[in-house]
Amino acid sequence: MEQSIKEFIVVGLGAVLWDVFPDETHFGGAPANFACHSKMLGGRSVMVSCIGKDQMGLDILKVFERYQVNTEAIAQSTKYPTGTVLVDLDNEGQPSFHITPNVAWDFIPWSIEIENLARQTNAVCFGSLDQRSKKSRQTIQKFLQLVPVDCLKIFDINLRQDYYSDELIIQSLELANLLKLNDEELPVVKSILGLTGETINQLEQLKQKFKLELVSLTRGGEGAVLLTEDGVFDHPGLSVEVKDTVGAGDAFTATLAMGLLNQFEFETINEKANQVAAYVCSQSGAVPILPSEMKTIFA
Image 1 (cartoon, rainbow, N blue to C red):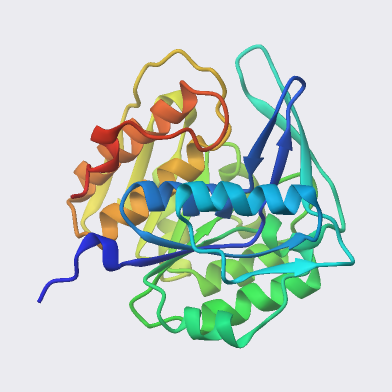
Image 2: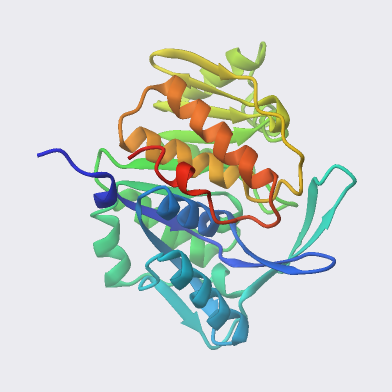
């Protein structure tokens, strides 16, 4: 019997927080955005993180409830507050971030519930920012070591401020089987790893060096390229009126994961991922409710 779309367990592993814009506050955190988008696209999404025992933490649980994301693996800290990020937007809607240190998601504790979840997970998304503290890094890496052999382990590199190191990037690539990065992050990875040649050559070197099944490079309004065992799949992007770009990459990653789990063709996956990411760019905030026709693209 084939596994239906709603049976895939998809995990966001790491930060959940509030993005504080100049005029409003939005729910955020790349793994949390990934979990919400994956749920809207048909997955059984679970979030693994930590929030403070404060109003912001309670509000986060309400958001996850609205998106029907499972929160049983979210710990609550009495010592550390719920995370926040100060976000500024330039004239083109591109964000810059100031990420508050020493917050709850820096201290994600290990638990038997998280261990049991890891052993059942079909796809998990994690980043470098989520591992900026020793405690959460230990939890995230232990989780990745326990997932089934066929689990999609997506490293969405997500470089922010100075919250990464060469060692962490390499460790994470060794734990992953899929890599998602953008055209601003690739030059940093190129420098760390000594990649050479044109963009596709660099992606191929990443794929070969770390035995990755797929490397995805997003290029903002210029679309995305998927490098796979079956070849290179390039999408030129879609033109939309940009409200802001926050969360678009996470929407792309969620669509990529759901497309792969449902064994769609790579060209189709790239097309659908660009469509969903473009829609998110046209809306305010990281996780706008997707139109009904987008929610069923892999049904």
